[in-house]
Length: 417
Image 1 (cartoon, one colour):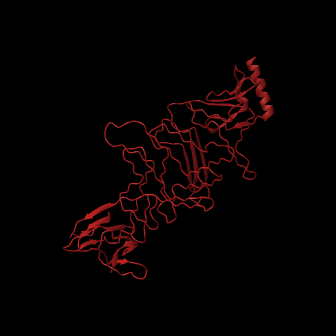
Image 2 (tube, one colour):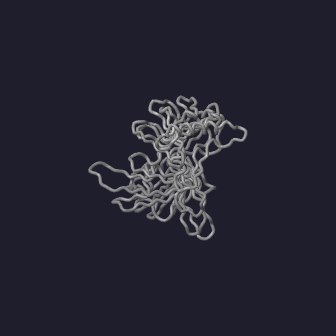
Image 3 (cartoon, helix red, strand yellow):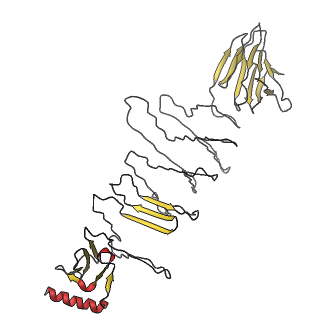
């Protein structure tokens, strides 16, 4: 009976296909003639050559519409689709699924082999190449899922990867990264800084509307629990270490943090370039600096500034440095107290306050500048070199406004010369 089925089916296929060969289904890239296929006991049509297995179910018995099986020793591709129609340019393959299952299910079931579940390669000629690898094998510890582009022919006008959430009613993130390992959540390695063009490692452009709402460009919540058995543990919410080297010409400025806020005068508005707060520790510093503070313009409001206070005894002299901001003087009767200001160069923005706490002595306190600096007492008097104080309660306050000029902000009972 099986021989009769084979004979009938061979005749039927020979009539239907004219005895033509079915290209691309033979081992080694050859051809497997349809009239040499066999019908097995499960009613599946298979090539009689057992090195290849291509199942075409008859009568709907099999759950698979088309099944390709390659024997272990056959070095060949299971399925190749070649689209040579460059006139109409149809798709090389389409999958239409009206059911509720997967449109495409790829399963890799060999624990001893590396490689990806899928690799998509687009080669347009020359050095223009795009590769997408998905599903890295756990055996390939140095590999990764990747989106690769090397378009050597011209610059690109679009991103390598774009995630577009176009549903205004969806309040969920467009991208979520979950990392339970010990490596970086995100690692960005950018090597395009050698050009003269502006190089931005991360560019965030956000526009929002809505009154009374909070809009965040970047919001971080970083928590650490646990204790240290010894040593010092630091928790950094933001850590930046820009380094500028190799400069030989021009002016090079390096900013670890640069903030510029622009407000609106409508309603009651306040623009704050930087806001810092520190609470909860044994010692709290909202701002702690390891260098000079340079005040380009503006005043200090809302609180005081602590600075080094020097106490000058009678008949003694003092040369200030960049850390000294307050000098209390007791006058003597033998010689004047001389207070020498720091050089303005490198100390622009520095403020110094000098006052007489005890003026019972007969001599004076004389404040003078360093080097060729001058002391300005108004726009019409710019070349002074000393300020003299002689009584209890007299005071003077200076600000270094450029590399060579101290300006008197406030004074009482002084003589400027």
